[in-house]
Structures are given as structure tokens and as C-alpha cells.
Length: 218
Image 1 (cartoon, rainbow, N blue to C red):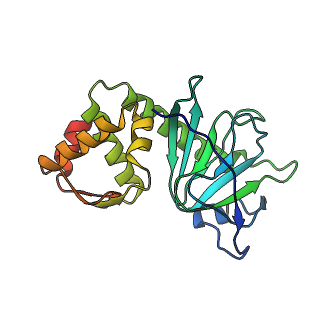
Image 2: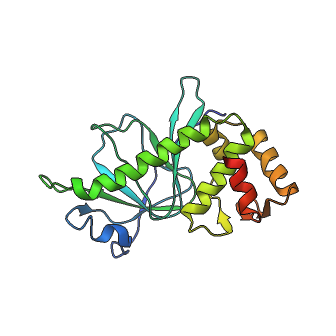
Image 3: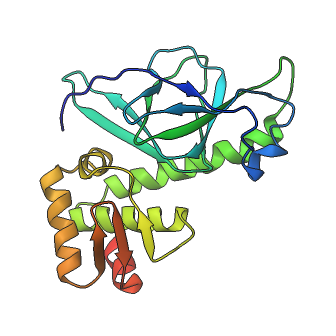
């Protein structure tokens, strides 16, 4: 893993950009900010920064991570288009959030005194379940099991299509799975050689043998 530094830059987009259907009703009583554009590598919020808003990925992708004492980075989550992030148990962010590629982000701040627990609870629980599943992946000893589980997760979150887009780099994947970039690249090559996946491009994966990939992830 490498040491990282971040910077924050956001360019406002038109406020008429539509809300994601899943949020247009649930978050109608909130104060919604116009969608802002974050270029690749731009910081959305920082560890230790005051919280208070939720964020939705309009397009692009986000990585949530923490910097270790020695400067290394541990990615705890990726968020794709339509997904919500920024849930905290107190008033402070405990992780960094950063745009992986050019990304549109809309922020939502709850109106004062508004009880949105019924709308927010399912979203928070969904994030908790994904975090628990990530811990299970990290607990697996085999590198190929981790990569296979990661690819299945990405496919499921993109509508279970055979062709999936990976906006994150191999380094990002390694920092997420607790593997080196060399190991991640070697596993991708091995899966390709076995005919389990095809790699039309660096950021595109075609799953050719679903059953084999599922078998490797279990």
C-alpha cells in the first residue's frame, strides 16, 4: 500500500439535475444541495470533519478510506451510482471520502426537528450489511476467494450483468481487499487464463463462468 494525500475541489452542476428515484420521495423534506462535480481524486469529506449530511452518488464512484499511522491507506467501501453514504453515529466523520473518477455528488441535510428514522434506517442497515460482508471477505485466507467475492459484489450492484465496469484501479482493489497490487493483477490474469472472466479493457470485466466464480468465492 502507498501513502496518499488529498485535495478538495467541487464544481457545482445545474440544480435542476433530477434526484435518484429511490431518494426523491424519502428525502423530499430535506434540504438538498445542487449536484456538485468532483474530479478524480477530489476529497468529498475528511476524517475528523463535522458531519451532518448524507451523500448520493449521481454518477461516477467514491472510495471511503482511512489513512493508517504509517501513511498507508485502507479502503473500507466503494459507492457506485445511486448509492448513499456518509452515515455516522455521532457528529464527526471517521473516514475520508474521495471521488475515484469524475463524480457527481448530491448532499442532503435533514431539516431541523425532522424525524426521518423510518426512511434512513433501511439505508443505514443496508450499509451495515455490506460492511459485515466485507469483513467476511477479508477473513478469507485465499486471495482468489477475495477477488472472486469482490467481482460478484460489483456485478450484483450493477444489475447482475455479465459486463461490469470497475472505476477503481487495481491499487484501489488491493487496498480494499488487503492485497498488494501485484497479487490482484496476478489473480485477474489467473481467472482470465481459466476462462472464468474476460478482460476487454483495464476497467471492464466480463464474467464468462458465473458458477465457477461463485464457487471460488465461497
